[in-house]
Structures are given as C-alpha cells and as structure tokens.
Image 1: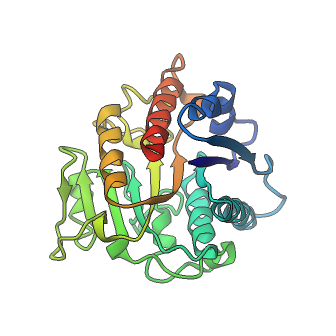
Image 2: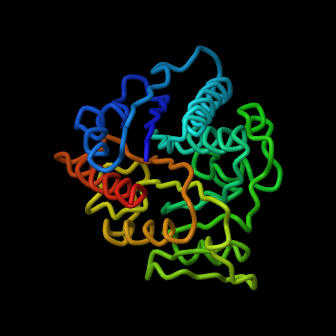
Length: 269
C-alpha cells in the first residue's frame, strides 16, 4: 500500500499546526515501517486573503485535488488538519471527483450532524440531504446519505437523536443501531474514515481541540477501527482535533502518534 499524507493548514495565526508537530516527530517515518511508500504533501501554509468562506472553499478545493491525485495514483490519502470542516469537505469532494461512492465512519466525541451547532463542530450537516452552497463550491456535488453514516464514540444521548444512523456509543463500543434497518458498514462499497482525536479521553489526549471527559482509550479506538476495516474497504482517512498548543509534556503528541501508526498498520495489513 502507498500512503499520501496531506497536510491541511488551519486558520490560527502563529499557532503550531498539528502536521508540523507530527512531521517533526517523525510520523511519516513511522508510517513507512508498514507501507510500501509514504509521501507527505503540504498545502499552502497561509490562508489566502479574504473572508473565512473564501479561505474554506479554497483550502477544501486544494484538499480535494490532493485527495483525487492520490487516488488516481493508487495511493491511500490521509488528510491531517486541526479543523473538521475543510478536511471533511476536501475528502468528500476528492472522492466524488474520483467517482468513488463512500460511506462515512466518523469517530468523535461531539455530534457532527447537529444542525444547531457551529459548522466547524458539525461538518456533516453541510453535506447530508443537500450540500451547502459552500460545500458545492468546494466540489461536493452529491449529498451523503444518512444511511451511509456511522457515528462512533459519541455519547448515548446524541445517538438517540439520530435513529437512522448506526452508532458505536462511548460506553461499550458495541455496534448499536437504534433504527429499524439493522445495517452496518458490511454492505458499504467503501468507507471514508474520519478520526477526530477529541474522541480519546483527555487523560491520554490532553491536546484535543475539544476535549470531553469519558472518552475512549487508545485500545478501544484502535479495536473499533480494526472492526471497520475488516468489514469494508477504507479509501480515505481524515484526522482532526489535535491541538499542539494545548499539549501537556508531549503526552498528546505521543498518544496521537501511537494511534495513527497502529491504524496505518491495520490499513496496510
């Protein structure tokens, strides 16, 4: 397996980007232990001048181009960024450009389908049912069906709000389907796997952008990802939520490096 790691910039001026911390710590070299070839693709580090919407569509569009180019070359794209929205829109647009139909498996501690939340917190709202105009501008032409969305690691109270999506709750990590369809990822043609590192417990991931007590252990997350990979092919991976500026003595960096390396090992097996 060939792997292309795509680094997506955030908007925090002067902030340490997660990809910078990972690259300096040798993440790609650790990936290279498990894949045939690992490449690093960096998008422009500074947002173009203009309003937030212009930056978002520009970065998401650049991400889509990198994802599509990786897929055309026969490589797996792994997109790293601190913010959910440009990463998600870019991956979905890149998959659609490559004419790949993929369901979404989204690991997070917060609800990415909450219509009342800030779009940065709930990016899937932009692409289900009918793509938001800015999502279309970024290249997302078709909606994501809610029947092809699996939310993993979220709280049981959130799970009850989405009866038509499959869930793994944070409590026991057993597959739960509150709806009548009884389906899971086994019938999906392919999967876009998204990992927001805020799904991990702050005791092991203090550098999460949105930490919530009672998150998953490293082992629980890796086991859940392994189950997804065993049931459907993963065609793209997004990783968000790592904020190096909030880290404590490098613990978050070490945890994230371990998680990502183990997931790449699973994908390459």
